[in-house]
Image 1: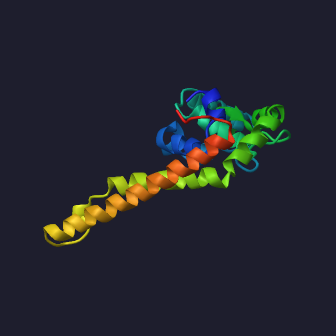
Image 2 (image 1 turned 90 degrees about the vertical axis):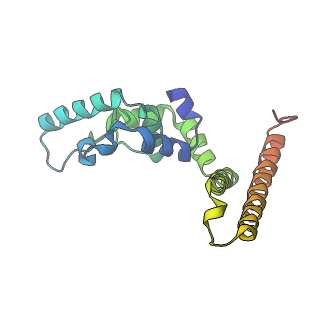
Image 3 (image 1 turned 180 degrees about the horizontal axis):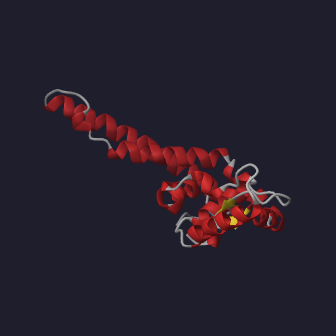
Length: 177
């Protein structure tokens, strides 16, 4: 994911990208934060190593965007690394991009968007279930299970379609692509 893509992506998708492919996932999380009373020279060496790890990370852009949206970093204290940036660098970027970040945070709070995300997750989960394995029984029971599952899938898909159509109409789209 590029920085531009990350800027236009919802929080849930950004977090999923970080969770799935961050190089730091298996590392000690304390590596990215300065310890209390840690000497500046020691922290600078650890910070440089953390930034080096972040530089080649496939989730770096998503991690940076999440850090900016979360308000991580402080302009007066150099105490962390997120997305390849120090805390002071994050604070500077956040200040420079304040308007864009405010809009992104508002979009993340979008109730209808969260509902769409939740419905999509539920639809994928339903589609991945094995209806034959839920209950012991004969052919009739398996057919009932499949019928129930198909009805739930159709209802979820219809809800998603209805919300998307309404959102597209409000955004001025004519016919959905």
